[in-house]
Length: 375
Ligand SMILES: O=c1nc2n(C[C@H](O)[C@H](O)[C@H](O)CO)c3cc(O)ccc3cc-2c(=O)[nH]1
Ligand SMILES: C[C@H]1O[C@@H](n2cnc3c(N)ncnc32)[C@H](O)[C@@H]1O
Ligand code: MET
Ligand code: SF4
Image (cartoon, rainbow, N blue to C red; front, top):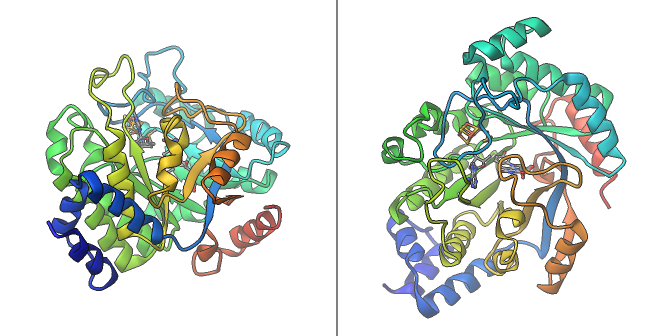
């Protein structure tokens, strides 16, 4: 492979899928070269993070991903069926004292297809989970300063349209756009991980001008070709709609008690190559690598184009990866500065999208007020 040729291409016509596969297979000094070129693609020397509160609205989910520990059975007495709205507001008010600015609502997909959830919704006076989430977000906006970001899997067009009114941004990982994975341990019991459905949802978010977070999950049995295809699929959507504000490159972490508990985690080299290639393909958006999933190695990603740590919570755990605690914000600042970069807090919506094309008047006003609080 002529690596130099490929790098010249990144500046001219752009990389094609075969180029991406080649880069994902880089070895020896090619890897150093790949990292260096990716790192030169960054548009600033600022590394960002968002101070958030994690709200698991429901742990019930229609899917059963082989890697997931978040989803609970409705029969499990400890499962969160529906988190109480009042409790959420109380907790968020408390979080304001710690400077939290993002209310991250992450929950199981289409939980209202389950009878137990249906009953609970009815008891509270709601007909669907989307109606409940909408109401929670509206309350958050009316009673706190925090800005809602909803990440609850696939939503239909009309539901996205409604949630757009009360969210400054939304998100959903594509995971991987390979149909093949629907027949493997990762996604065989997860109809909602159908790549067609997920790509359509991201396209709908684009049509609706919802600032959007998506990303890929590395190490769930995919091939390099499938990673390349997933990144190209996201790039196509971004070229068409331009609503994707950040791309998460998340590494699979095995969890005890899940079908994939003995599955190998991706290597550091694979993560380095994927983060680097992502920066080459998406140099105008943030590449987020969660620091709690790479506690020992997270500085490396700053040296290959990574420029965002994602949501960090001073008060709540990462319910998706409960074993992986957040580094202290102070510690993260030291790690960032040591690499020669500036450490800066951001909102759940990136500056480029803070305008009336993407936000209604109420959300725009609240966002501008919150932006003034960033130091
Ligand atoms: O704490 C977490 N936050 C996750 N976040 C939140 C993220 O860390 C930040 O809050 C966003 O970057 C806000 O812009 C996600 C947001 C999405 O839209 C899609 C996927 C994720 C995944 C996680 C996750 O696994 N753990
Ligand atoms: C919220 C996001 O978290 C990711 N996710 C779910 N389970 C795991 C795991 N075991 N390791 C790493 N990431 C995971 C998925 O990509 C999901 O979309
Ligand atoms: C708790 S996982 C994140 C939200 C959703 N269930 C998804 O997988 O997309
Ligand atoms: S990763 Fe999301 S969609 Fe998959 S089982 Fe867990 S909660 Fe459900």
